[in-house]
Image (cartoon, rainbow, N blue to C red; front, side, top):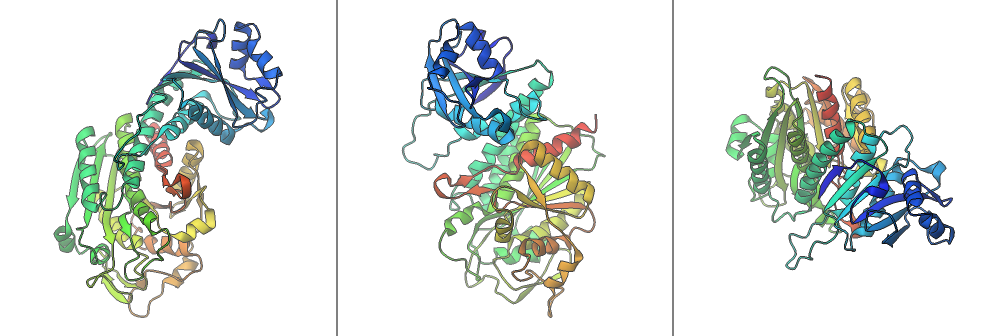
Length: 494
């Protein structure tokens, strides 16, 4: 899919289709009104007949409209004008792109004249690009017979102004879309394909394509370092664990990097603390944190942001076997702290803690870990917002603002010391779980014990990394949030 910016007036835009909005009161958007004037009132006459009342989600495709350069006109229902906002805009773009998916249209122009409060044309272009890419995304590489790809190949935007930021927006949004696609592809692969070794090879491929530095630590390297916590999760699997390190250097050597640490459990059975069988197939998505780090690095590299970024990905399977770690076992982490493993299904924090300690060697300015960590976060926030914790209030505000700007929102939960008592252990420095109350918070409190040497945030994407049911599949979140955070950071250097 290719994205671009068009200039000129709607009626002169040459394309297979031009798309304009209609509000629920049967009122055309500004671009729609321009088309209507050019064609002598043809659109308004159709609307008055009741064929397009403007309800949200409705579309009407018209062919060969007189004095319009485009071959077709697609009218898009926007709903009530007084209620039209960010969510309605994104939904309208999605409906429009899907409406063209099974037509002969290969190139289209989307007019962006509908106003969204407090949002400029660059924001509209960014969101429209991501929504269109999402609507057209398909994962069929594991099917023996793939359907021929039809529908849109190019989408141009006709903004209401000619601001210079528009061109930058479409370039950056395309890079984010590419990063999200990589994240989704990796997440959607079955675990018998996407193993820790496969993830390591994917990182090597990404490094080669974008000239990133890459290093992959093997089991013997981790044993030598003393990563007893990470290795305890890998004990039950025949698949070798990997610790992947990717480095993007877009700024000076002396500038401290932002480190992204992604949980990469390529399949999580729960280990000896075995999960229930229903929906266990979705545990292939337990590496979406790792996939989001790779996707973000891809986007950053394509944008050539003037910033240094390190990606650290601990990856393994969590399997039950005769060699698997058992509840009650005690392990020594890379930090030297001992952990009593009361539940082997709380494994994400066990691999992340050693990765976080390892990240210290890069002397990062900021560390953000991303993980499908707790079912408790799904109960707390559902599938709308990711959970966010931070040991620095300024960092928390940056991430929340980036999520709002990217329309990939997070919500901050507390990280108070009061919760640390729940991790008490009679036999080790602390336990890996704190009981059912505040499960997401105690998981973050566990990680906080390994992040005292740097500014750190934890993003729990258990409720946002994938969808279930008929739309089952990885979402690509929180790549938009992370890239926007890095874009903002990079802009401060200029």
